[in-house]
Image 1: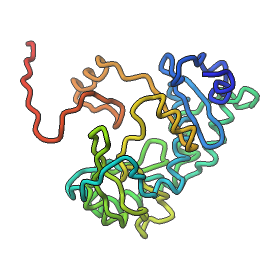
Image 2: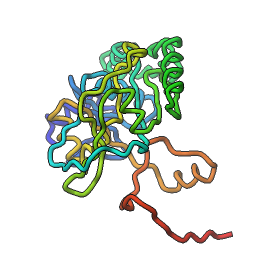
Image 3: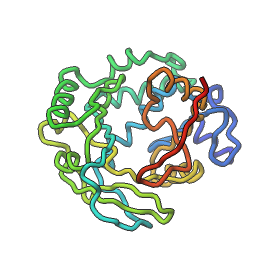
Length: 276
């Protein structure tokens, strides 16, 4: 990475490590490439909340409702109605204020530099109003969505629903595609529409298009820079930590793990032997 590229990615030399490899990752660093400027930061909880501000910029854009591109993919047919999707619905919140704070606390010239706030403080300042959160949760649950909850930041709602329900609520057919590498994904045939009862409170929907954006970090960074998007690189969760979470009867956060190779769809059987 050139010095000019590093200056564009790193906002604060005290926070950013030296970026030398192609994809800009070292020591678990988070690299963000946003619409207006890019910045890099270590993966601490406080800084991760700053990252959230830039991630939600994409969620609040029209792309959050648009149909996904089908280049270099073959349409297989309609997505199975019973297939489950994990969706994220951005809420009407003070995103602009959160973004200003994210810039200020990572700018060494700002009097707010380094003054990180807790999740609960950020939720109270920038999250959606409580009445609107309740309205969204009630609507989703009453229409059959599962796992409905408001994120701790108060900025978006999480929900799980079948393809059939998603098609009815968001007014678009979901089709299944196969890439050149034989990966399959779901993508909407037309732009999705936020349901009328929560329109204006919910600003978009993420998760209707499950197409993988990039196969490696370098490609992800190039795509983000080319399209004005965002690329996040995080140090992988250690296997021992994942095992500890499972043994405690809990679950890792969604999309926090990736194990390859993945078995093909269908039934996979394997014998396990546990030591007493």
